[in-house]
Length: 364
Ligand code: PMP
Image 1 (cartoon, rainbow, N blue to C red):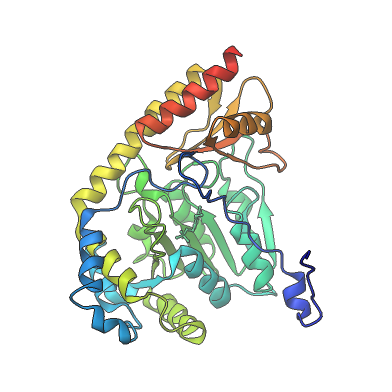
Image 2: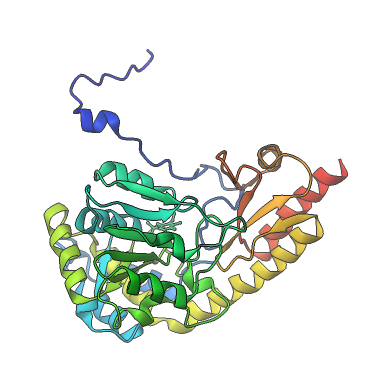
């Protein structure tokens, strides 16, 4: 029998929601999956060891609720990023952290400013939490013009590097935005920052200077743990306290015991983390040069994906042709970017599979 949606008991609020559609997670794994910016390398082996330990020797503890404030993990993050523990917040993936950010800081009365091309969850959260979102157009070359943000607002949210462009905003620009908006919360979503060529580009270095600056990051990309769902925020203790109050009003145990154990082990294995980021950075350079040779224009990405425009042919059709050959990339059918493909940096083998599939199409 055909399922028919019955919305009689839905509130208007639920009816009016326009939810985010996550990138496709196909069921069979012979596909070359370059569509959702996961890390192609496994997490640190220490993560599996810590989770196995929690599941074997400490299995009895699963009866008990986890540490509500994930204290050990926050302590390890504070040490790794040279912060105080009261400057650190963790949640169930940075998507949840961002939801709490929207619920805590942004208002109906004064808009939230964000680039017109950015992470597509921001408009969904704005809708869900009744925040007025004003999109500020990126320049022609997809970079951010900070002067365009000179208007009254309750907040600014920028992904840095931006998604899906991969373009990095400088620390000077972030410093300027935070200085010019002392009464707004400036959120820098650094989901991909660890893949930047230069170290020291994270806005974490500015949080002691600006009490209105909040930086979010995630274990999903550079730490290869998208499946564990751990994200974090760094900022002034009073911003962190606001997030904690909001968290405790929704879900006081966002991180389960296994996620806390695994994430803690990942933070402690700094050498593995750095090595993996470096490998992805090198593979990105190779991918950019291979795509350029095939006639793609590729934006200067500092993330673990590239945003590339084919010289010839329709981007949507190319994405479809790749899919028929078992390679999935992301195509956005939306103004200004409908002639681009977003391609996650894979292993050398995956990138080769992509390039070979593209070459076949060119020579066909
Ligand atoms: N911010 C940006 C810019 C992203 O692309 C993503 C991943 N889709 C996230 C945040 C959320 O990542 P997660 O919830 O896995 O931490």
